[in-house]
Length: 399
Image 1 (cartoon, rainbow, N blue to C red):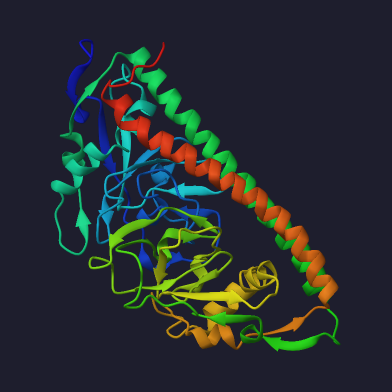
Image 2 (image 1 turned 135 degrees about the horizontal axis):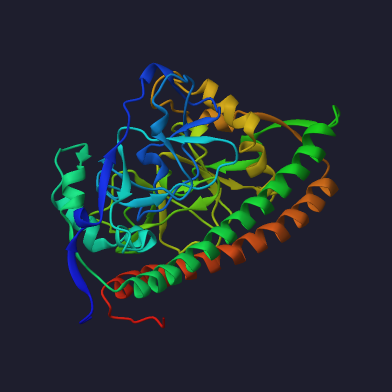
């Protein structure tokens, strides 16, 4: 630590404000212009590949097009706990799409080349830094920070070779986590492809007409006064997207949100009732016995039938679009479904042997997904444990 030097972030970089893109040209319909928003940041930092907004006008200053590996920070946070405010993310390569630098996002522009940008990226994902940002933020329900507050953050920085080594360790863990997430996305895509071929393209008219309510019990388990635990794990709708759980929250029963009402079991299906087009859904695998989810979810427990079949039926792109179209207030910011909207959906029941064959195939896929998810959890915990220790010199790396 004796070689570590104290400095302000403002001695290393400047934070550039984004452009005020016009609201009338912002859309959910995909095109080649992705408008980066605070919704593209994970809790704890890192880029989130969902909740994209798009911009369909080309009349904007081209210096607000971001480049791959640009480091950005959130300047505004809408969440109750300000759990993304100030955190950093790196712009990924998204094919031929362009990422636009929106006004609520800060871009780090390095002015001193004697420092490693990736080290600063990880520094801006530490709890100490984010605590400083939240503590100095302005606002009440919506929290804001500013370039000057970020630039005023004081920190200790090791020599450049050590910065590179520390960033390398953390980035390698992140790369492995991303690889496993990509593998899981590919595996689920395989299951979706087979589902579509067997049960959509090759569906038979003579198959029995049923509803979702014939296949599953809706919201079967509810937390009550006899709940045998003093603490719960809690999952809100925003913490799971396309089957990927970002993280659980932990509460005593007395402190838990009023929406924490639905107990979930192994193989229960979660479908968000709010903004269905945001794809907040998943299958719960081997949960802790005290896992409770928000009443914003519809929880489906299958009746001795293929939960994979029902999950893939409910989460296909066509069904997601349909559910969004029938949600109350579908043109507002928070369109919402009723559990009965899902329960009353009609579908064709395939023959039992087809069900069984598909379930065996899907079960092998989700076994691999679950194995990968365990590795993701382990690597994430390791990364989060190492991050503060590496950033303070408590743990040294070989150079």
